Length: 114
Image (cartoon, rainbow, N blue to C red; front, top):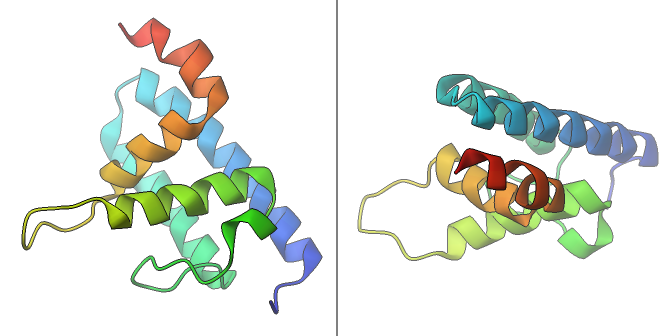
């Protein structure tokens, strides 16, 4: 694993901040902004060498910090779900899984949405 500790810590912080932003945008139902913020985050995770351009996870998620690990596990889960032929994996699919894996979102924000 060639990533520096500083890079991974910075990425972890970025993931946490983006997750909080995404939760807020989800509550406000601003889906286009969610997709944009998520796409930017995925580009940084890719630049950090944790995923490739096809969203394949290149490291063992359990070896990463908590938020990074949850994001990588969500990517793996989204990729492994069966999809109809030619249906692309969308950011929205990954986001749904990632948000549901997050305890803060499940306990505090999901109940408010109904």
